[in-house]
Length: 100
Image 1 (tube, rainbow, N blue to C red):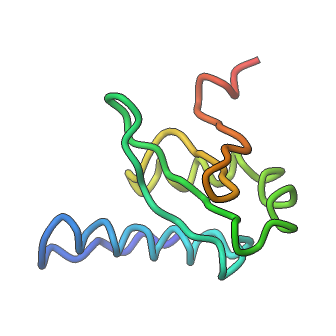
Image 2 (image 1 turned 90 degrees about the vertical axis):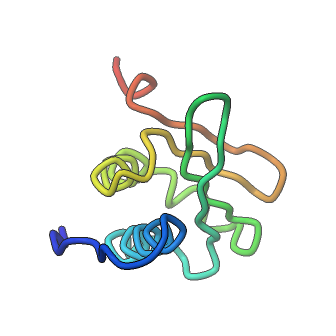
C-alpha cells in the first residue's frame, strides 16, 4: 500500500478528494467508470461505489468487497461500503457484517 502522507495543504474537501483518488489507485480492480463518493447514513459515513455506468462489472468487484473495505478503512474514508446501480442499492458491507 502507498504510505505517503496526505497533503496538509487545503481544505477538508481537498483532503477527501485526495483520499478518494488514493482509494482508486490502490484498488485497480475498480472500473474507471465506477463513481466513488462518500455519503452520510444516520451518524455514519459510507463509501459508495456506483456501477450505473458499468453494471456488468458490479459482481466481479463485489467479490473483492473485503479488500475494498480494508483499503477504505486504512485511508480513513469509511468503515462501510455501499454498492449501487444508480438509485438502487445492490449490497452493503461493514466490519460487523463480515464476522461469521
